[in-house]
Amino acid sequence: MLNMSSVSDGSMGEELSDSFSSQKDDSIDGHLIHDVSFVEIEHPINDDITDTDAKPRRLFDIPHSLPTEKGLARIVTITNQKGGVGKTTSVINIATHLAMRGARVLVVDCDAQGNCASGLGIDKSKTNITTKDVILTPSISIQARHATAVEGLHLIVGDHNLVGVEESLAAQLGRERRLVEALTPLRPHYDLILLDTAPSMSIVSVNALTASDGILIPVQTEYLALEGVALLMGTIQEVRRLLNPSLGVDAVIMTMHAPTLLNTQVAGHLREIFGNLVLDPPIRRNIRLAESPSQGVPIQFHAPQSHGGQDYSQLSSELESLWFPGGLRNE
Image 1 (cartoon, rainbow, N blue to C red):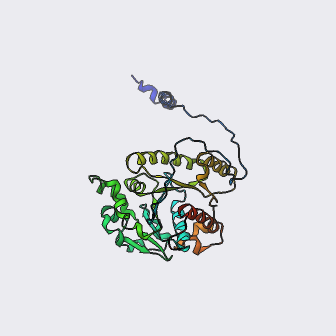
Image 2 (cartoon, rainbow, N blue to C red):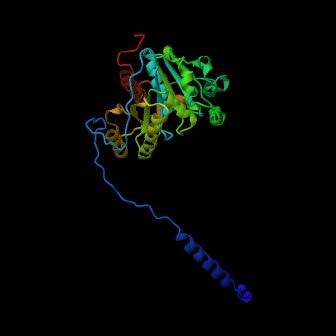
């Protein structure tokens, strides 16, 4: 029982407070998990990130993609389960460069942020049919396409309504194959269909992977981005096992690169893991590249001679050779 006479003494209140704090700290510290170790590990570093002699280190199985069926568009999902790695920027600029070289390209924005529309100069607030509508009603895909300022490049607009697709499809059979149905009538009319996805693995992203021939993985050359790649490899295996056994990795592209020690290390690790699936050049950090979406145009129209413009031009040439080894159909 507390002696009230002692409470009048201010020092007693301080003692009680100190005693309680001590007991509280002791009681919770016993439940604290100590599993962090700080160990500095030195990694061998290649000064030249374009070194292709590194042998793949198979940390996980990497399925390679198969050739596209003749007369049909190749469908490629650009994805990484980490955000902020340059997926949308890569979609917009690769699509633009290939379209300017004569390819017939369709971009399908499967991300609720809907940034592909902004980057290609389309006001998505005036759009009547979006990717959500196409997934819910695949038969309207032909009417959902928008022309862009780039001849031969079309877009199906994504917006915030994609967030509600999961609930709308909850009780539907074959919900993972809605994009397969939607894109089937479009494939004979294009050379390439690029699907831009959100970093989360939602039913929309699963639809994209199920519909795709191959995957293009953009990876920021920083260590945290490697964790997203590891998660994605597990997802790919599940999709191959359950939904699309022919799905494979087309290529890995390095984004937001800077000539620092850390970036060079990560680039080296990517080459060890993916071998010749890693394409050159890496896309360098560039202010012009960051500015172009605010202008509503791809980098090719905003600053083609900038580092970003040059890098995406060279990378698109590599992808053109990869995706169209026999040349484009209209060449």
